[in-house]
Length: 75
Ligand code: SF4
Image (cartoon, rainbow, N blue to C red):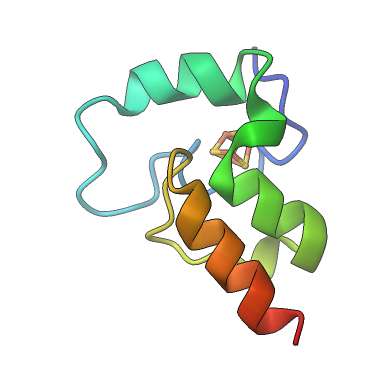
């Protein structure tokens, strides 16, 4: 059961990304199904800019990349 409300449309959660990290299931337990979803890089971009702006290759632990995307797209 996912706690993140983006799970139904999230390409990472739905395994719709080539070359998923080997720890994808662990990440899903921590972020998507746990209490850390608001710390997920994909969540941060989707929540601020919309899910369509989340790069397919952005993974939950890439928060620095998310900050750069948010800074660039909010300019
Ligand atoms: S990867 Fe992030 S945005 Fe996607 S379902 Fe998991 S917590 Fe939500």
